[in-house]
Length: 238
Ligand code: ADP
Image 1 (cartoon, rainbow, N blue to C red):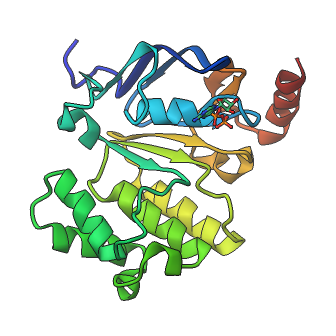
Image 2 (image 1 turned 90 degrees about the horizontal axis):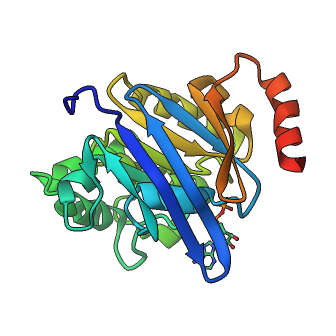
């Protein structure tokens, strides 16, 4: 198999405990380019732990993650460069302005001309006029957009999003949906964790339900949301 037709994401047997809490209990995940996986599950199901493991921010106690054919490894910046992460720990430093934050990130990814790329990323999120602001000076919606700018800065093939719609009003949520649809392409993949399946149902190609650190369900996205909702309730109460 060449790297061109290898899955974009291939995780095997991801296992992670925090003390006695078993957050991930042998999770596998295979995603081809072009796929968007919606991950649902109750609080504490392990969704964030899964995303952080896929992003290479957290080392699982067992299991492997390959992205774009390369095994994730802290010492391999090329594998990390394929990945963008949006999370509520926004990866933005409060002591730095937005522009400084994004320029720093651009340098970490070895991007040529960090200022131009950072400014373009802020402009795409309508934040160029706030480039001298610090994260804590921004509204919730702006902070969300800044975190998205940070996640997309290096044009990652794999975008990981942890509850990106939380705290957004309807207009901002629509905007974000459009942005994600625009960013998505046949050679990219997304994993999107959400509480509300309806928020991203239309852009998903697969749906997974994580319960107690294991997949309780994973399948192609059903056409209709309503019957899936019933199934989801059953899975939660099984
Ligand atoms: P979810 O995102 O689905 O809410 P998490 O991955 O955040 O789930 O958490 C899974 C389990 O691991 C939960 O029981 C949570 O309390 C625990 N956990 C997560 N992170 C930590 C941590 N840093 N220290 C201790 N326990 C943690």
